[in-house]
Length: 602
Image (tube, rainbow, N blue to C red; front, side):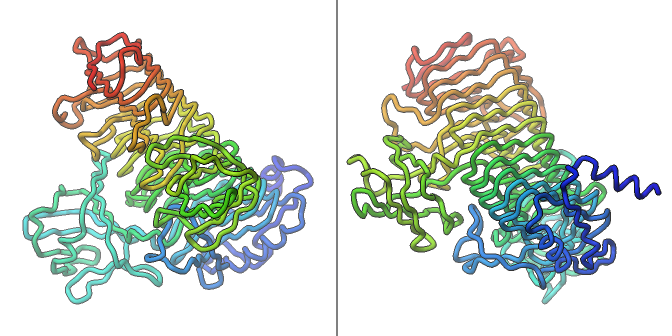
């Protein structure tokens, strides 16, 4: 009777019309370690044609193997190049295509994936909720070992039980389920301080390895340049991004709630050309008590070419080899002007290509790649992929004569508004948030703890990663920035507004309307804020507290302003009688209002 009422209560929050589909009715049994993939496929099929469905997983462990999984073929932004992963084939545990109004209810279950798999794909879906479950891999793609003893000629390390290894011809080889590590990217984690540092596997690769206990290995070789301390954890992975953890493609109204992402293989949760994404209480961090220190091999959440509203609320990120949150579009370069209305466009970065970057009706911006100067807009009539690297685009109206080969196009239609709030960003080798979108951005009430690089980076470039575009309305308020930037000195500014406009155009500004207010900065070094090519910058009522976490480097500007205008700096508490250095480059006195002195340079 109690069980009956518990089930009744569980689904009371769903509309009466929702069809409850219990996966156990399709041969799926929790806690059996059997492959649930085929049965879950049938349960998903049962949801097709329903007006509203709840895919219910009774609490337990569910295992997914690639053998019977759906095979997909996706080109995914910021993923592997042709050299690394020439044939785009991905095995997927939960594959939803063209479905609407479905809730995947985990009831506190854990989904364990085997081998290399994408956990879920939502393709051309609408109104999908995934909630109350944990994601893990039987053998995470990350290998971890704790340094116990080290000398210039030897290292003794304890291997984490999840990190399968073998000693072959006196060399340690990392392996998993139908894979082994062939290339090595190493990051050293110092758990006592919550910091991550770039490291190398090379001295271990060249050493002699011998097992001295079940999970203890002694390495003998040249470790004179290996920088580590006892109890540091060396984390090692293959840098190739052949898989992503999860993929939302051309979908809308997607909600993720109360998800524990213990292990993310490759790039993390990737959303590409999707609309209205609400991620609440998503925790990208190792399972408590697991002894692991890394959850994600790359980004935590990656948004490429999305639109509508992106909301990240009450989330935690801790233990990542790359950025917790990255939001951007993609610049494509004009390779040929075919006619007065037709262009050939080229994907330039080796990891981003092959997807439909434009569709009929999309508005695009034309810009000069070197200066990032936008000079016109147009509307797409027809767009067609003619190869993995090229798109043929026909516009509704002829181009302006200013358009030349080498210029860039950005899809303006697919640019989102973003809210990031009430979240923790810690334990990352790189940045906290990367944001480049022209729509409204609010970043508030977050904690950025010892991020390896800038806590917040706003770039925009058409020459490196080709990640677009300009920002026009950004508010950063009521956040705590705690001792960030130890991996990027001397350019270790906590917030860095750094568009890659290599050619400066007089009186043209890439970004505009950035407000940084009522934040607390706890800094061990001088740099706080660097801003370039921005029209309208406010830095007011912030509190700066000096700490002794690390030794400060040479004295340099706390605030570095390059080529900006309409700057307002006032009411900030720097916590000492010695006011910071504010340095201006390529600016005039009329470009700034400030209640502290500044150094004007040309």
